[in-house]
Image (cartoon, rainbow, N blue to C red):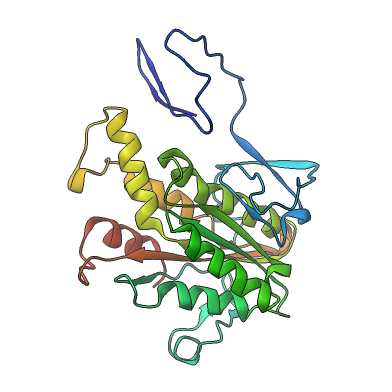
Length: 279
């Protein structure tokens, strides 16, 4: 993927194995925008940021494809949120109920139960006609496997897609994974379905983006993040919407997770995501 375009050079990042690339190798552009295959066959599968299966259950057949980064729905394409999305947690459903099409932030220090809230919400969607997409970014492979096992034991994988890029994955794929998950959720939303997407977590995606940006010699800003790190998350979270009646009234509800350090919610990434989400 091309990230830098200057008068005398182009900055690109590798999306896969680069063992065959050497100094002096010729590189050609495909002339296409990055896209992934999409279909119902992805339900119940574990895939990576390039939509390739990593669960050892064979290839996934798909006849359609979708751009990894599509423009968010405009004002005319949306309607007001009026249907509830039950999390199964009484404290949330009674005090701060979530509507289908909203963006609600789960924020806290490590080991405070952020992933537990997200996974409980997915488990509670059984029988609710909601398709769930769980994004695991920069986590331990054992933690991701534990979440997948929980989903399988409770029968939640029937309506769930897990997109995982673990801690040993290249920064480029950790950066890309949330957009892949969002593209899959958008596909179902435009198929007049209700979807729930969990970004676990956006702090690690921002760190991966910072690594890429510094390697590309882009000028760093606050906390060494690039100046457009706000746009990195805003274009991702803004894709959550309740579609208008002309588009079938599907919905995409987003629950992004952000990890804080020592409860500091005034840090750069937490304040950015707080300002984008509904609450």
